[in-house]
Amino acid sequence: MNNVNIKRLAAELNLSISTVSRALQNSSEIGEKTKVRVRALAKKLNYQPNHYAAGLRKKQSHTIAVVVPEVADNFFSLVIDGIDQVAQTKGYQVLIFLTRDDYAKEVNFIRHLQSGRVDGVLISVSSESRDNNHLHELNQKNIPVVFFDRVFEDIPTAKITTDDYKASYKATKQLISKGCKKIACLAIPENLLISRKRVQGYMDALEDSGLQIDLNLVVHCDNHDEENHKIIHNLIEKYRPDGIFSSVEKLALHTYQSCIDLKIDIPNELKIISFSSLKIAPLLQPPLSTITQPAFEMGKAAAEILFKALQEGKSDLTDDHIEMESEIVLRDSSI
Image (cartoon, rainbow, N blue to C red):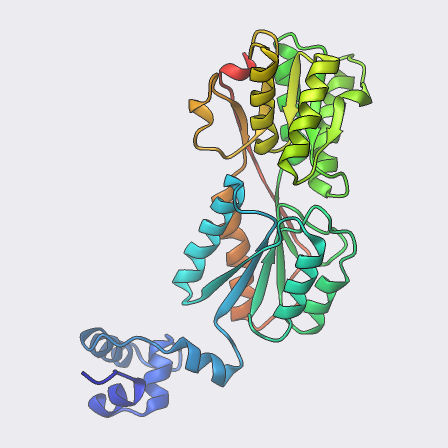
């Protein structure tokens, strides 16, 4: 069977190609009766729009890029799912670029995307990112950018984050309410805004509760698992904290392993609460108390903002900051 295209639909309906095209795009210039006729025949003949050809005519790729530091983290996987769900409804393809928290890779990816390979970019910056000139260059190429989770505050565009400070404050206060007086903080690199907010929430909770802040108990980890495990193991062995607030899930897992190695009982000797989207959090022994971000919803919100801009032909997005609320789920690790 021959491929069904707009030309064939137009011939069978005795309409012009432009009328059929506008009817399929739900144009207000076309009457409802004509739209119904066009859609009915398109459905009957299993017509599939050629987004690639349409993109060439409009100088669009019908593709967006998602740049993330990792995918092993359940949070980023859920964000990508949310983005992809919206992209599918818009007839767009999603390209995933994994930086592995490498700033040089991030710069290379972004400069590669400036060629017009994608219509827009959704990004969570790497932990090594400091200079953001490469992202300013996207604006100069009229490619809209939306940040999620890890953002650059000084780039005027849409940003989707969660209540990092408030959630960290509440989580630390939860440990204090259970009798913890010597609470450690496992943080990611401090050049990231989310890291600074989470550490500040932890510190303010200690101060507001009359507890002394010991900077020996605040450690900044990176993307190297073996080194992170050593740092956390040494922290627990040397300082013997009675509580740990972890800013990301992988550091909480290293804490569990270190406690096994050091024969430290969770939660009787050490209580733990962590930012995490782990589906297996309730299955850990003991089940892990989590600060769960609305990752899927963040992905959907970021994508919807980007597609609205693309639909309106905008490359400069409003400098809006949408902050979503995380949920603290208490389990046995912090009781």
